Length: 447
Image (tube, helix red, strand yellow):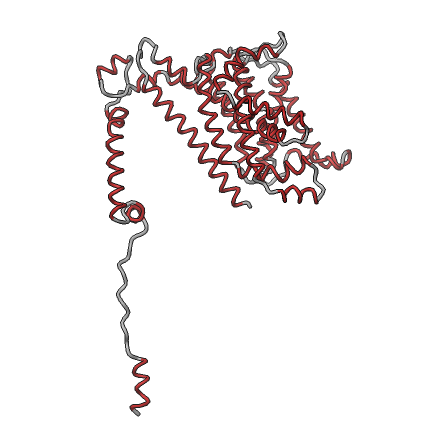
């Protein structure tokens, strides 16, 4: 009996487990600090040293810019009287309107706000999931929106062609938002109402022709509606500030990618004339600094146009910056094209696709997706480089900031405007960087 019960007794014998280690908090603020900043002795020591150094460096700046700063004053002398060791933000605040609009008339600045607002509204449907024609919206924003915006910004007597395209752009925007409202309400789009009628006449193009008919009809309505509407003319030489910087950089950023794609494809072309022309353009533009291109555009570009064509300085600068940005973008695009394996080209040929179909349907979408970081880096660099136009006399935000220091009431105010502009440029550049990261993640999920 004892012999048979011994194994059962051994099986039922309790053996205690070793004590568990204490629970480490890995959540919340305290947990994040312990994990990332104070995980061990050396990490804690390095964290303390870095924060001490940051405190010693940032303390004088924070005292100057915030704690001892003057926000309300009528002159710089008054700022120095109130706080001689602090920043005089009162001058920047007094000049804020000029920093944004330049010398654009105050009573007409609503046109600038309206034009910028229309641009934002135009691109807003690109973020809506139910909108399908996003490529068309992007193309119309590049082609039609500049005519509508320039009509608002310039005013005065415009050509019939300019006025018509501005009305077509406005009609497209109105039609697009009517269709978006109908989509979210569960109704058919406005153009599809005419589709049954168009199917009787042109069955293969019924959807396209119905949308085009609505656009033409709405455009004609806009033409007659605003026929007697006139805007006071504003000379281009009064444009300036952030408004002018955004115009130059916006045109350059929009046109840099198409020009870069054309030059990159031309450099890879089998036709010697196109290949060598593209190579010469890219290498010539990339071998000189941007300021040289700007000076050459102002002095030499009028020689290439007839005497009847009068290009203003802003148009010359925009053309020069677009070519400069396109040449640099061409090498970025060429690098992306070289990253695509030859098997992609062979697969496209095997299913009967031609050169342009292969490029725009298979190769370029993959290459551009891989080039997003480089493209955005080029855009950020281009946005900052547009401040060089102040050297040739355009009153962009940098030149307007310099003019603060020669104002009789704010004479000698140099640091504060530059700091304000730096913060403004950081906001723009950081926003572009964050959007590129969002776009990368979105495209990676869609693979």
